[in-house]
Picture (cartoon, rainbow, N blue to C red):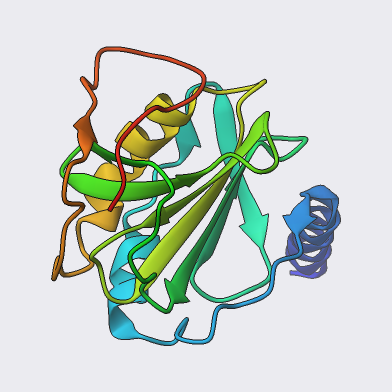
Length: 167
């Protein structure tokens, strides 16, 4: 019995040691992160996007992929107002594209409440591939508006940036 307890204790210790080595990405929770719809989104996030595995985050309603991190997701933001920034529609979701930090893109859902935002390092993954991978999860957020003239992207067409019209 003593051997079994020691083996179990050693296995548990090894598990703790290994879990301590897993990277955790520090993110801030959005103001509406506790919305049950965001829980629906995070429950459906993919285990990987392209060759980037999902990694742990320390904030509610968030997701991250890659080591180093190449994709960050936050759910629970206020829905953005109409803007002159370009808008694309991919996988049934409209996205406002902010290219201010190119090659990194900040993509925010348009017409969904609460809103979600994705930050993508396009030197690692194409924004289109990321948005397509996240579409099933993001569609859990109710659609209450749409871009007026979105550029509809073909999911099979992979580019590193997005081009489109305004919301």
